[in-house]
Image (cartoon, rainbow, N blue to C red):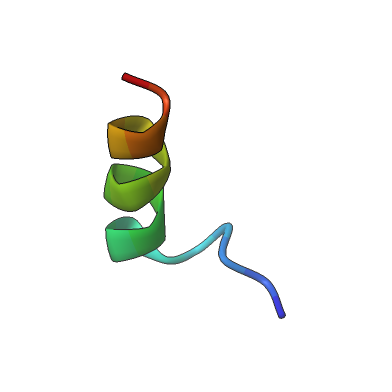
Length: 18
């Protein structure tokens, strides 16, 4: 599963990185 081109995944990953 690739979430590199998923805008939502990028935001979610950023939220987890907070």
